[in-house]
Amino acid sequence: MEKWADNFGEELWDLAQTMTKAMEITAKYKAYNARVEHKDGTALIQSIVENVGRMFIRKMDAIKCIINLAEELSEQFEYNETLADNFSYYSSKYSNIDGRPEPEIPETLLENAWMYRNMSLNPDTHFFNISVNTSYSSVHVPQNVYDRYPWVLEALQWSESLDDVFVQNYNSDPALSWQYFGSYTGMLRHYPALEWNREHVDTFDCRKRSWYIETATCSKDIVILLDNSGSMTGYRNYIAQLTVKSILDTFSNNDFINIYKYSNDVEPLVPCFKDMLVQATPENMRFFNEYVRELLPEGYANVKKAFVAAFELLQKYREIRRCNESVSGCNQAIMLITDGVPSNITEVFEAYNWFENGTKIPVRVFTYLLGREVTKGVEHPPTWTHAFTDTAENLLTEADDDEPPRLMIAVGAPAFDRKANHYNETRTARLLGVAGTDIPVEDLDELTLPYKLGVNGYSFIVSNNGYVLMHPDLRPVSNGRLKENYNSIDLTEIEQIYDENITRQVEDMTGREMSPFILELRHHLVDSRFGNMLKLPVRFHYDKMRRVSLEYQDYYYAPLENTPFSLGLVLPHDYGSTWIKVGDEIKRNQHMGLNISDFFMGDNWKVHPDW
Image (cartoon, rainbow, N blue to C red; front, side):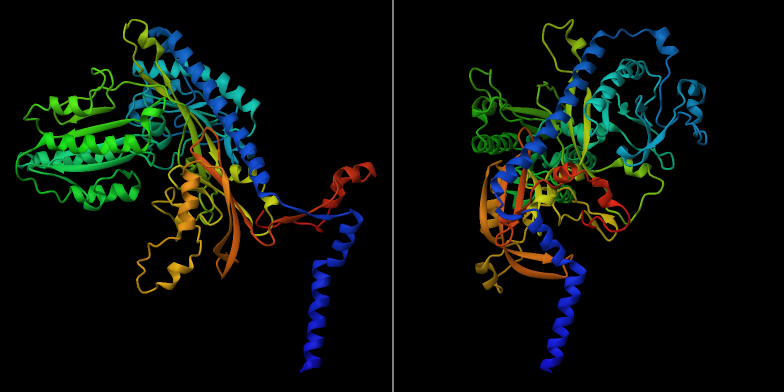
């Protein structure tokens, strides 16, 4: 047995030496004076943050150029009915495309078919091999918007000159992805020009997309007061439910809300959401919609008590978030859904919402069913959205259903109609539209220098809501279907930091216990702090979760300036702190007159599948 074991061991050793070419690699290291050096995680994450930061700045500068030109063009444009009657444009849906079948134009638009210019498109590797034309933009108009309406024609005409800044941005930053301007009319001008998916019913409206909604509105704290008194029975109760659903549909993950039902008393609609504002995640929205359908109106409406509860809750969050110390303050509102306000509640507003002789009003109030809302626009910086899937993927005819969807984030900023203030003494902020550009998450991954992280090292990005934007263990698809909450998965659901104290209490575990280390790490990331947490015990998996073992890892984190994101860096504690440094091999070979490309001839090299 001993002889067999020796022979078997020698054969394995020889096989490993042959397959790995360990002797050749060792000789190369000696020839190039290789040395082992310490890997500085803090310096590494600073370098990565600078790389990503520079890229973000370029994207924001591109958006500012679009916004400035859009506001200027709109302000100077004078509508001419004669010119409008003869205006034509590149339509993503109805323009003829060279070498392709003619599009099916609805009968109601056939008489206007002349206004859709012919397009020439070619596949472009930069835009994921989709056929595009980078010389100009094209336009998408929703099905329920008639493109011959004067206000739509006006937006189509002046926005055509945005092509100049689109092309300029693309030439200045070839890594720039899709650029677009969504008008308040519903018209979407996107660059480069492309053909819209004509095989499916078109339900797209840019005004309902997350990038438009999140940019046109700021993050906000909302309390909805829902009248549940006896007068809200029957049809009124049904309308109230639809109103709540419509309001909830406008919220994003950046918003925090709660719904209080009131009659004789005031209670939270969802009992476990008492005395708090909850994040407007898909899960929480589903809870609200389920509970509102179970309401049984009764009693009388004590609206005064309802407003006191709402004002006190919002005041608590203003103090927690130190709204008085920030320049922009906080965006807070109360939305009242009722069939009438039977009592005078002026004293409540004087006590909770009218400060400094009524000049400071921290909470805006909107009424539904009977009142109307009055809004006041404010300027705010570019808005970064949460992750979403790339709509352009649907335009690929040879798309692979087995491949995960391409995740994107968008940065956008609102443009305002300056012409509206020409004749008004009181300045208003009327929304002209939203400009934006997409950033593939895979582009962010490339900027995190994965080749410097080493074996089992990785990076991740988390939003200020604690949601994971990028992580090697983020799996947005399950059984071939996109998960409903693919863009709202919390860091605590992915990073499996081990806690010995929790593991010992198996009998009392509910499945919601979390290590204090992961909560502390999440807290630092959400608060945009810079620092590290070293030698944390982690359940780490290998070979796509075939094996799991307890490992120790070092975590480094830093904020991405002027964005709601923070970057995390993970290095193995033991073997991840060093790396092998050699001389500049490329320059050495060039000095010796060697052609670098000769190393990549034939089949004696290949790229690692994970790279």
